[in-house]
Image 1 (cartoon, helix red, strand yellow):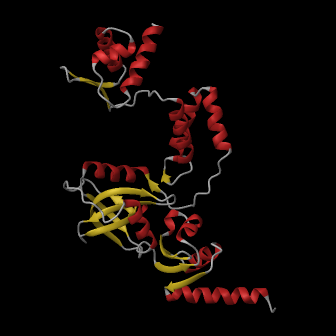
Image 2 (image 1 turned 90 degrees about the vertical axis):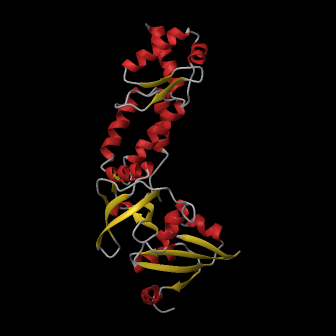
Image 3 (image 1 turned 120 degrees about the vertical axis):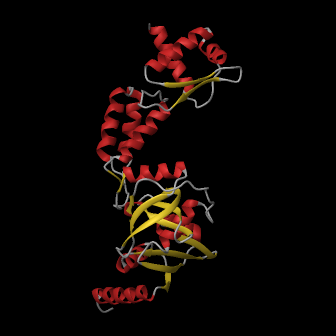
Length: 318
């Protein structure tokens, strides 16, 4: 019985490699006969694993998704990666997933070998989260968007814009992009006939999805396009600020979701960014501790003058 169980685990590990295995190849790897392989495949199926079999010389076995989630076999590195991911998800930006992540993490740690638990504990103790308190988005919304993207079906949803006005949208989803603070959807807007970036926390999917579509190629890589949109069209106030630093140096001080950087020369770069608050944008820019010049908007220049006068008055006469 022990030998059979060990062999089933070895067989399952091979099938999880994501390829087709011929019966003879499996028998050779496991050191058994092809008939034993067929019997073991039947045992795995009774345990809930969906193993597809294709007869013939070009056929073989492959593990497929099933109606239920059977146990997985993970190597040491995969176990640590899953545990760290669940820890991050427990304090992440996906609404309603915190408690679920903690339950899954507790189950994983209960069966985790001591050597792996020690590695996970060391990582947890050596890590502190500095993630911003961005708005959360429901896991159901992300799943609905991802499913429409995979199926290449038009997404129909209600959307609340920056001005607070609701609208009904039709879009061909391309990619979900996570900036570390917010989730965004890059999609082709079927009504406006152009690429648009939507904040996922403002999306409320409608069912059913729309018709299938042929995928389009965006003008640039998805994450780059979203960052450009975040730095310009996604905020109430859009700003163009010249920083007295190279683009590489400025990139080291700015989070990816803060906007787009464009080199001007070796000592200056253009930062296209934005914010819903001029006050927050002014203070954030000042905290970069770099000389800067505001090109636009005029409202940001006025806000900086107000703050400069306030700071000067607070410092008193020289």
